[in-house]
Structures are given as C-alpha cells and as structure tokens.
Length: 404
Image (cartoon, rainbow, N blue to C red; front, side, top):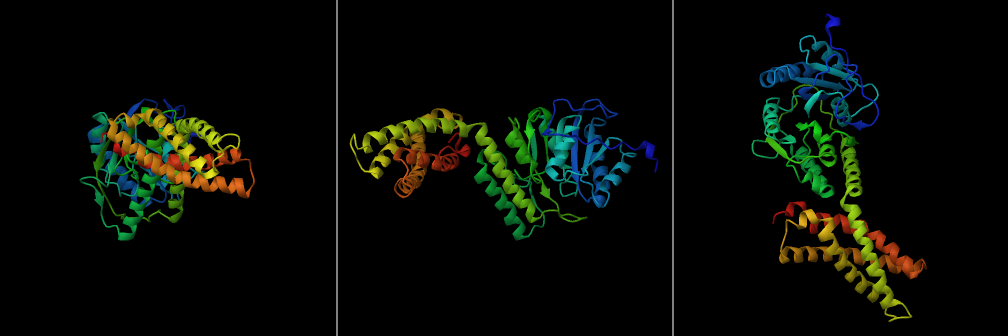
C-alpha cells in the first residue's frame, strides 16, 4: 500500500452541530465547491464498505462525473472500518474519511460530515447495503427538478420491506405513529419520516443549530430546516447481508427523547408562543367574568358554576383569536362557516376536558390547600394550557385537514 497516496483523514469539526453556508476547508487539499456530498456513517462495516464505495462511485461517475464526494464518518470501529475506507482512497480519490474517537451516534455523524462537505447538495445513505444505491439516481433527479428534499420511502408505490418479521414491522409502524402523535406537523409531511436515505439542498439547513439524538436525522432536518418542497422515491429496504444490525432498545428510547425535544423546540419557536399569548387574553376574560359571578361583593354565585360560565366565554374568545392568528395558515385553507363551526366544536370538546381538569384542580387548590381563590384559578389555568395546545394541534387545526 502506497500510504503517501492516501487522502488524509478529514479533520473532525468541533463545537455546535450547525451547517455553515461555506464549510471550513482550510485543512482540505480540495477546496472547490462540488454538486453532491454524500455522507456514509459507519460502525463495524468493514465487510460492506468496499462494495458500497465501488457501487456508489460507478453510479455517480455516470451521473455527475468528478462533481461529487463520498464522506465516510466512522465512530472508531473496532473492525477498523475507517482504516479500510482510507485505504480505498487510492482507488477512489473522491472518497473522504473522518474518524470520530469521542463522539458517537449516527445522527451526529451525519451532521459532522455535512459540516466539512463541499457539496451544494447534501445526502446520507446507510453503509450496510440495505439502501439500494441505484435509487440515488432517482433522488438526484428529484433534486434537479426543484425539490429541497428528496427522500427514499418504503411506504409509497415501489417501496416496501423485504423480509421483516411481524414484530419488526409493528415496531417500525408504531414508532412512526408515535412520531405523528407528537410531531404531526413534521412527520405528516412525508410518508416515511423514519427514512435514513435522502438528499437535500445545503441552503435548506445552513446556520440552523441541529441537536440530533440517536439515528433519525431526517426528523431533525425537517423540524429545524427550511424545507419548502419535498419529493419521494419508492425503494425496497434490503436485508443485511454482512455484519450485524445495530438497532437496540436504547435507540428507541433515544427516539422518544428526540421527539419530545423537537416538540418543545417547535412550541417555543412558533405556535405555542402565540397560543399562550392568546391564552393570556382568555385569562383576562376568565378572571373578569369569574369575579363578577363568584365574588361575595357581586353576584356571589357558587365557585363551580361561576367557573364553568367564565371558562366557556374565555374558550370562545380564545378560539376566534387562535383561528385568526395562531393557526391562520391552516384556517385560511379551510374557509367557510361550516369548517369554522366544526373547528369551534372540536376546540370546545378538547377544552372541556381541560375545563374538567381545571375545575377539579381549582377546588383542590382552593378547598384543600387553602390558597386564595384567584391564585388557585390562575394555577389551574396554567396547569391545563399544555393539554389544550397539544390536543388542539392534533384535532382542531390539523395539518392534514388543509384544503378540505
């Protein structure tokens, strides 16, 4: 082996997981921009890496000859995948290799590769040959037709899984359904949001701080990126021929943690802030009516009856402001009195559940804990805010209802 002909290992980026508009190429011998950078995250893939690099190189040489790079990002594999990949750079000069000795995880490996990539288009493919390389040409075509994101999907025409047993199918679909419940506005955009095989424009994610967990990088990209248009290509997920699967229960737990983290991020970013601000106007309505009805110096009605009337008027107030502002992008595509009335009914049913919790909590805090009635009411309102927002996102103003 002529080691002086090897491409040197790509330096590992440091700091936050953020894709720059122009990568730091000071330590790279090849500093020109290219069309495509395809990242291949690896761990113990020595038996597959050589065949994969050959197949990908042959395919891309026919599509965009000399205008691409393959970036292997290896997590210091005990089987020396990184070393074998580096040796292949003699035959495949477009191949770059990064070795990570401290950081671990597929999703972060992908982002680190993208940080040092030279491509206007970024992509990822698994190293185990379960993602058919020939589909890459179809993904590339979708990008050339204008898509910001092109995803290989198992769940559209032409897609599927080869020999998965029933248990694995249930786990996969269950994970997707859980994701739809927690992040409907993100996972509802794609038929296969769990896919790890896709291409996207660098401009869609530059300077967006990424915070991935585990191995589902696509969810992170869609949630945090600027994806204006997407396309899908069907593919059949292949059975692994060499090596061992790395899917373990820990990764399912990481997936759940990732969903919750993105949920909080999106709430803080947009709708939830507006929902809370609208809710504050509802608090004023609720507290004012509650005072007029329940205070001994006014009507002096019972606590529960006063609360129910005040809450219903506050809910009507909140619905109209949410419809006009918080969820305006959806409500504008569901015009007419009938759709609005349906949304109002759904909003009331959901908030009724919150109201029941609110009344129970109010009575507990006031009668059992002995707090001031107005402080108790304020605490009860705050306690059910998350309930109301979560379920209204899923049912009252659903992304999938657009245009209906």
